Length: 144
Image (cartoon, rainbow, N blue to C red; front, side, top):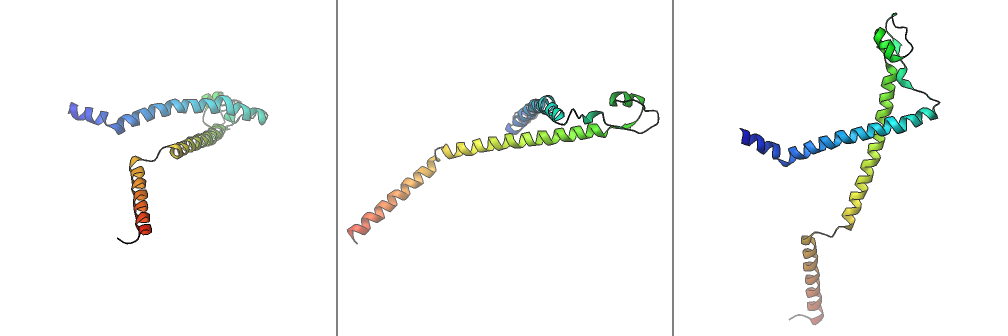
């Protein structure tokens, strides 16, 4: 059983998936920091310091606080501002990832253009050229 587990764990797909998850988590932190530390403050300054994260609706009369953290301590609240902030973050993150993937795909496309054709394709082209040359030489010399 241990041998089967080792074979499963060392399979290419499992190792690739593990590396992808780890890199994805690290990349997620980078993108979250980019949005939270760079884009959202700029958006806040452009909109006059508008911050949705403290917008809430008290669901009980016991909630009298002015900020979300204190309001949650007092009772149930509908924190719709936090949802709006997370939705805006998602849209920004999705746009950033779209442009990153688009740039990577264009780089891959350029690499494919610059890459030499496969050896089999080169051989087929040589055979085609030799056959064309043979047909041309036979047509100029006439029937044998």
